[in-house]
Length: 358
Image: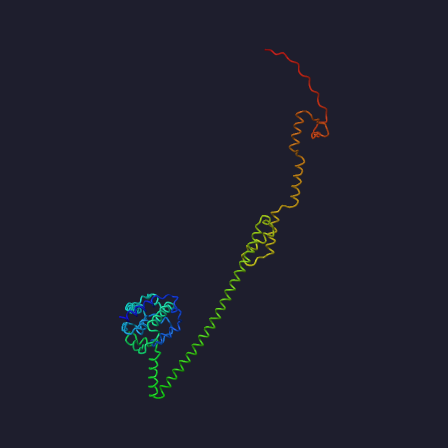
């Protein structure tokens, strides 16, 4: 009972940690080394724990006998089998009074960040429960033999650690007993593996260099496109200014404005500038009146202005005639030129009154 209360207290303390806890700052390499050393595995990526089987075995190493390893599937390849593994993990959580939430929907997607965070918490719980010490009598290979897909797990992740070392020693002993033939085969296999590693390293280095070159080329192309767009906007604004000037009233009907507009709106190849200049000059000449016509019109306007008296003169003349205060023969009179040269005819004597018959 005391052990159960202690486990419940540690589970509660471990479940309540936040993302700012130092446990969530453990790196991937350290996590993978810890899991591989604890369970005799050879994991290379954090995403390989997405099936939930590794988490079940971590709790089995922390609390031997709590996990039913026969229901854990290390060969889970689809979400259905993975969810079953997480169901077994949740059963263990309930037994140990662990209140940590298991986000199964995210973990089974094998997202690196989600699986990294959950594995960091699992390591924190293990260190809290055991003090970070690996059980001396715990053999991960033997415990996995009781689970489903143990052979597949052995093929996929392979063994490292004490169990794997013992297996390697056995194979080496049998090879020495059987003679030099197998030893030569093992040496050839090691050489082949090392050569493949060298080739992969060379290919990776070549790909990295090519990727870097492509990135630099892409950056240069983006810069060139940006400069081209800036030049296009600059010259387009200049053409708009020229078009605006040609459409102003003081320049609209000039030959130069017409030539510039013709060139701006020409769309069929390269324009013939000389032909456009001649055409616009002829059109401007047809629409502009000649100098002789302008002079003639100005002369007619002057004559009409001299022959026609002003309103004030006409009013003064009318007033003088009405009052009979003007001498028509006076040289200064405006109507002197119109006065008759002959003497005026004497007026007739008035008629005598005649009788009227009533």
